[in-house]
Amino acid sequence: MIFGNDQNHVWLAFRRKTKTRAEDYAKQSFSYLIQFPFIDLGRLVMRENLPSGQLKTSPYRVPPSVFAEIQAYRDLSVVIIGYSILHTADMFKFPTSFFLLACLPSYLAHAVDPIVKADRNIEISTLVAQMKYDRVSFSAKPGEILRISLKNPDDLPHNLVVCKPAKGNVDDKGKEVADAVIALGVDGVLQNWIPLKHPRLLAHTGMINPKEEGSVTFLVPKQEGPYPFVCTFPGHAQMMNGVMIVSKEVSPVRDLSYHYFQGTWDKLPDWNKLEPEGNGTLPAGFISLDPKKRKDKFGFLFEGRIEVPKDGEYEFFLTSDDGSELLIDGNRVVLNDGVHGMVAKQGKIKLKQGLAEIKVGYFQKTGGEGLRVAWKGPGFNEQPLTKGKPKPKGNPPPAPIPVEPLPGEAVIYRNFIDRAGPRAIGVGYSEGLNLAFDANVMRLAIIWRGAFMNGQRHWTGRGQGFQAPAGEDAFYFPNGAPFARLESLSASWPPDETRASAIKFGGYRFDDKQRPTFIYYLGKARITDYPKPSGSESELFLVREITIEQNGEDLEGLVFRAGIGTVEKEEGFVLAKQIMCRVEGAKAVMIKKSGNPRADGDLRVPVKPANGRARIKLTYSWI
Picture 1 (cartoon, rainbow, N blue to C red):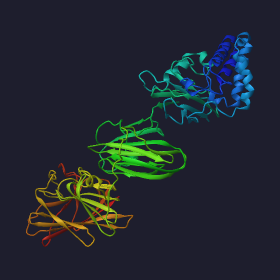
Picture 2 (picture 1 turned 120 degrees about the vertical axis):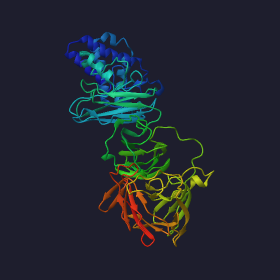
Picture 3 (picture 1 turned 180 degrees about the vertical axis):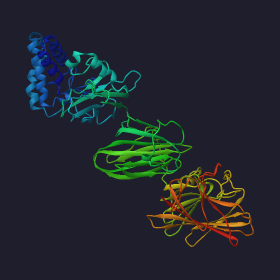
Picture 4 (picture 1 turned 120 degrees about the horizontal axis):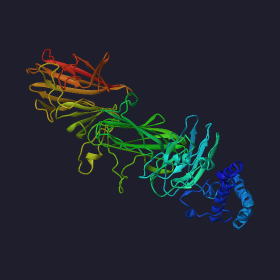
């Protein structure tokens, strides 16, 4: 309350029979009142005249925003009367005192209108029996009028003191200011545990008793940086602290934390099963990759709470290189999984006003990296949730040009496909399953579900660069030729070639649904490779039939490599923790403990022709 501290100081001083101390506090309060430009006790206060810092409870400041509370005038009267009792002669040397008392009835009648309206209100609560605030960070814009409301459901008294940045603009968690209270000794008690003359004191509530609440309204400084806030009651500061980030860009995400991981993934892992290499907070509320410890092979899980301003539908945007996902209140809103270049995805969700949990997972394998998160909703356009370079001005990027199959037919897309090479052949099936075949080395390169391809990159401008798959759940097969002649089944697989030397591409033919059969040659042997989707919409899988016609070619020692990173199960072989592979028509072997590089973990099938022909049938399904 306004001048609540002064009231306490006056009567505490009386009880301690220290008249000089009471005189000092009452005189400080009254001397400030006569300096402030009141018209009808502050009914007209120009915002530009307000001092940077506290407009609220303090022996040195007037709190216009809480004049609306009738109790404020009781406290104000106590200060005036208290001082007059102690030093009547000095009191009535000031004509302002008569003005104050004359205006008091007017204020009691018009107490519903605050003098200064806060631009924003930040609500913070103490946590019962935990010695913590429920909010450890928030953002504020330079020059805005901010109101902090503190609720105290705890059984101990607490306050909230906002401090100016420490030397070097670092966040010292307010320790210097809290330590200054202890150094005051008995004066700390008299000042209600506020170091009133400390140079870093910016704003503060009063000491809030258990089960009560209070507030403080102040003008946010123009200087950007971290402004710690802390409870200065002795023994509380070590755990009860947070930070206000003053920045021109204010994030709606509060209490943002991150968990940092290191590893190699082709798709988003289950973060709960991994041990993080590091943890931390991002007080500004913006998602950032800056805490990374290396350039490649790392991941992040970001967690926080986002302030939803009103009920309605919100759209979230997620652009990343490599994989990412975004969840709100445990619901996946956007999935942008797999290893790829910068790919943009978005999703919508209906939210209620208040706080919603937000989680963003991201991993970077090798090469380029990037993560951008944004949202938009009722009453506001797209706003970034990541810190980084602003979106370029000018014309928006070209709209996607989706490549889609016709109902009941497949569609072919021949172009540069990311991680399938410059001679890639993309096939989009009407069932919602897709693949990319690498005609340089005759390998199945990628399979994925959902949307097929975005032709915008190759069908506009000069059409340069590699295009990533447009769908989700992309699975990438190993590089290199899928067939090799080996001295033994567990020998090292030959080095990868950009273009296969022993195997030649022979084109493809279509069936009645425009589904291709790929044809290639190993010497005189002719190989046909016919993939097609099967199963229901909810459980799609790919069936691949490979037929080798010997045609007099010596196929001794010929081995087909079906995958790497294999784990053998009763129902089949798990490839890279993502795909279940079943093999029919030939015996498949998982290589382990061979002692040879480029061998262990391979799923290999020895080619054993019978009557001049060998057949391998593989089924790939997502786990």
